[in-house]
Image: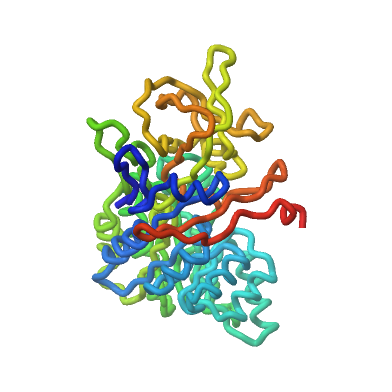
Amino acid sequence: MMHYSYSNSQLLCEAAAITTIAAALPTPFYLYSRKTYLENYESIAAAFRNRPHRICYALKANSNLDILRDFAARGAGADVVSVGELKLALRAGIPASAIVFAGVGKRDDEIIAGLEADIRGLNVESEAELEVINDLARQRGVIARVALRVNPNIDIHGHPYISTGRSADKFGIELERVRSLMREVREFKHLKLAGLHSHIGSLITELAPYAEVGKVMARLAHQAIALGHELDYLDVGGGLGVIYENAIAVASNTEPVEGLALSPNNVAEQLMRPMADLKCDLIFEPGRALVATCGALVTRVLYIKHSGGKRFVVVDASMSDLIRPSLYNAHHQIVPVHLQRREREKCEIVGPVCESGDFFAKERELEKVERGELLAIMTAGAYGYSLSSNYNARPRPAEVIVEGKSYKISRPRQEVERVWE
């Protein structure tokens, strides 16, 4: 559930009034509902309860340390794609034995960091990477646990930038080549085939791709076992889609459409059914599904501008704070923090950065707002702060975590002087 709602025309995060928080902090800032992301975690973890499993949170979605610590305390592992994420996961208290390291372009120092930390496995994306890992493990006198990342050529029918399981994508190893490598990997003296991995993309809104992944991974696992490999885990990726439209009911005659695009129970069933006779652990890697709905980017209206027959609402947040609309043409619901019940009008909601691509919404109907009023850009907990930048020498915004009526500044707004350090 998404714990944002209106009470007496004031938008609340859990039981805290956003206007109260904004009175104490400079805008823009990110707001996270702790209750929302914890409920999301429990819902997804419960879906896999009928078999040995590990929920490995994908840090790239949101690497806030307090959120990581909360997930670690509930038994989460981590899916990391850089040495920085690896160190963050360890610092948050996630055990190395619960960390898998993915990524198509791991540097030598990153592979070495994974070996030295003794993580659960390195998810390998090419034959060349296998050779490098074997050589680095040999130099250190260790056996590296690896999983072959399969590219099963499954199309999720989503945005091409976040589709990763088609044969034309840069990720993974083609299915037939994986079958060959499962034989050849035995010739590498410093590698152990600990698992198999597949991740076909993000924002998946159909069950069929998960059903196909389950079948492909089960077939490959049986083939690996027949070749004498003792598999520790099958990593089936994540990608569970989130609904971005109408997260908050603004009008009295509307209902919020919030949460996940698919039931975690249905997704788990599709993945687990073909694997019923396999004893190895199942790893599921949600990122967006855990944190997207917990977050909002709170921004203040700077100016109202009319030009070219359009009404521009200029706010103090920008593409440097939330790039998803510019990068993916992604939709985020945008609502007033204080409902005034004014006339609604189509407008362009834009930021101050010197790019025409610096926008949050185009031709969006919004209650008329005035200078100084607050807007909340909803469902911004995933790929918001983690994709933020210092473009135009703008400091990164604060991150605030709400629990009930109280809140804490989890990460303060970056000081301007730190931008160039």
